[in-house]
Amino acid sequence: MSYTFGRADVAYLRSDDGAAALVAAQELPLTNASLLRDIETARAKFGEHAAAVVETARLRRRAAAKLADGERWLLTDDALQQATPTAVAQRRAGRLSGRRVHDVTCSVGAELAALVRECPVVLGSDLDAVRLAMAAHNVPGAGLARADALAPCTRGTVVIADPARRADGSRTHDPAKLQPPLPDLMDAYRDRDLVVKCAPGLDFDRLDWAGEIEVVSLDGAVREACLWSSGLAGDGVRRRATVLESSGSAIELTDAEPDDLPERAPGEWIVNPDGAIVRAGLVRHYAARHGLWQLDPRIAYLTGDEVPPGARGFRVISQMKFAEKAIRAELTRLDCGPLEILARGVDIDPDRLRAKLKQRGSTPRALVITRIGRDATVFVCEAAPGRAHR
Image 1 (cartoon, helix red, strand yellow):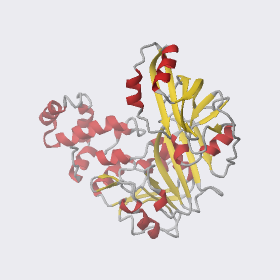
Image 2 (cartoon, helix red, strand yellow):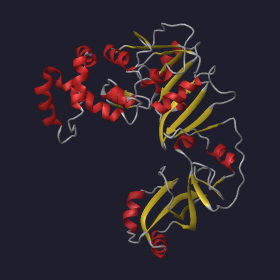
Image 3 (cartoon, one colour):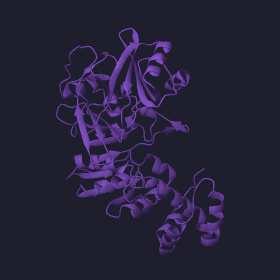
């Protein structure tokens, strides 16, 4: 169970003594196995502040992979879990460059840190006094106030909100169960430019949103959906996919692009689009941009004679109807060892199937299993480099 910080903890951690304690705490192992021993060591050195120091040191180690300069931040466990990765926040801040912005659920300041680099006026507010005190440490360039997100307290600003995604102790995809509820946010800022960060699994069918819905991935993992009100949306854009890499590369795709595709037999390659493209409903648009086509109009796998830059493609060796005996024989013929299995449109558990196939060869291979028409079809492929998007 994570430590619950108080304002006195934050005051200590921001002091010279607290800063020195945090530097000393980084010398501790801080693993799950060593934690009890580390806390006892910390108590001997830092007294009543030991728990806050140890928790902050552990959170900073986790934050380093998500937040720029995360090793100097003050955080809570919940705030870190929901914090926007710096690469994603910077991309959003770029779209708002030059605007006056108010983050009405600023928490510990992950969005604010990106916004202060792009925007002339950046304000943050939150109901949680502890997180506001942490944000003051993390982002000294932002103006901060304690305020309810549903009670507008600025004028002429773009409003950013990141509602909490847990209800009754579990993650929710119901817009009305977010905190604050998404319909209430929309009502409170109906005549304002509004940006709302949401979980990518949010049920948009329950949402009457007139602007743009952007789905964002980072390093192959879908991170969020972002709602942009009509005044901030791209011209004629209702859906956008943004594919980011930590290296700095970025790909954007919108539904304003064409989506006409040919109907052809499978090509040399099977292409598995990034999850942001799939969740944004832009598979056909992506295919049209790169001269690909669909294996089946209902399935997100694409095919073609080349693999688009940055995409993950599987070169087809053979194609067959789904039958375990035939698959096993083909994999044995190909000296299959490590086996990646991707499946869409079929009721197949890749892990169970991999165990049943029992391949003992030395050559990595891949199976792409999907439905074409009424038939479950298997493509035996060369193993593809990079991450698996399942």
